[in-house]
Length: 223
Image (cartoon, rainbow, N blue to C red; front, top):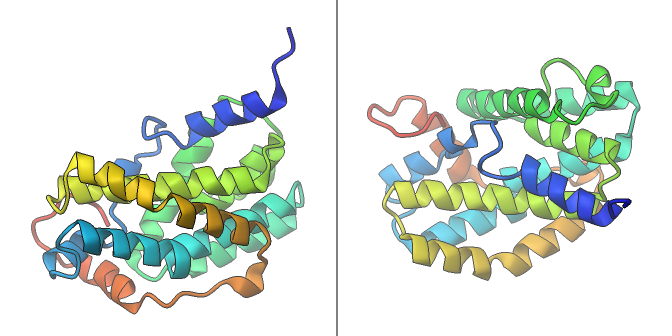
């Protein structure tokens, strides 16, 4: 029996972007821990607003654009190298840089269980969204579906961090995820039509929180 390609794509996305996939995403909060420490995020409402802003106007949006560019690049090694370099340059703090580079490296290592020549075309050190976009394209997974799954995983990780930081509970966290569903879908559709000219962020507080986290004493997360 031949496996349906759409079903196969779904299964791979579920595997690659599952919290159980061994990339270590649970160790990072993207500056959220500092935002909680500074009182910028203090309840479910402010957590939802923080996450929504990131995926529409911050690091989540830029990562989505980088993913789409990598997906469009296909097997063009030079173009992939260029977008990987750009993605690394866009990291606004030491911890943000370490996060995206280490996640990308871990993703490529684990995704190697699905062999493909794309792994020989990507730089040895590749930012996370570029790694996901390139591998998804190599396995013929549509960019819009990849983006939706990627953004959903991004939101889920921040919600998990918020729960561990005591900002919200599990039930309210699930409610936030449901409430952000339309935004995730709209951002995925917009990013699927984007190009590198659409890169840009307006989340100064989040960038500062990421920088300030570097000097925070007691902490749960690496970023």
